[in-house]
Length: 348
Image (cartoon, rainbow, N blue to C red; front, side, top):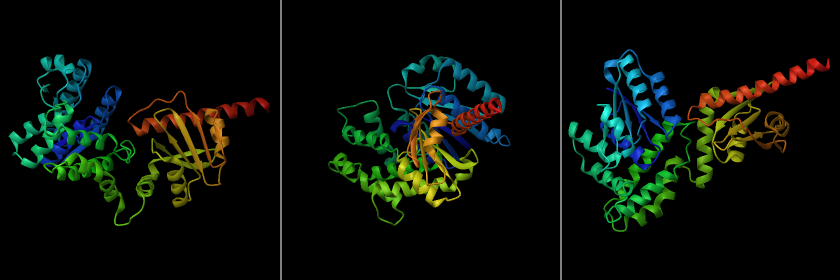
């Protein structure tokens, strides 16, 4: 069976996917915060759905509660395509949905990861190591302060909350691999004396182990190299054009100065690099081929230096869909080109 698994973007949500990955291998993972991201990801699932095998596919939603309107829409879309749907959650705000929809399973006494584990371990098989992992997640997610796993759970919580090194919009699959890697290493500390202290002390080296590939360097340099390498692999999908110059667009990539410059050095066919953040800021980088201070000024009234500038795009709308983000920047560039053409036509 093909499973399209949509889950939350925190410890409990990723733990649900870690468990599903343990039991099933034909799984496509999606992650969402609340609000419109849920709908965006659901539509992405429908776009990715293999219509040739509808009787062997299911949408699994975990650690996210839906509205009645979302439930109604999702059920209709699944019925239309012959898709099965199952939701496993623990948020009490979904109680009204649970009462109306048979595929909506809710239990507020356990975290979502424990619900998922209990559900699939009955169908497949129990696993002691996985059960211990789930108990750690459960202890911190529903805040069982007296539980022996609580302190270790707090470190687990911080580990995932701070796992921002790989952007989940730009590198969805790599982000999941990274989260699962962190879980695999964090599990090794369960049952050890002062496990929470030992794990916290080891986090830096666990992260370096993922990014190093046998080459030691600072964690920051290793991450930058990883990001640039992966951007270079998908650069054809990120291309933007501005007044005949060729560049790429990233979203919330972080460390823009280092990554932008390293990307342009490694990919000399590109003239500029733009990163758009969820705070509506645009960061422009170049390597001598275009004055991005003028580019920033023209596009968003920004400015700065010839090779490093910035600005604020007030009309920008954040999204978990890269194509939507890119379309906004393309529209911005086109609008300025049209305005320039009209001004030139008026003067002539």
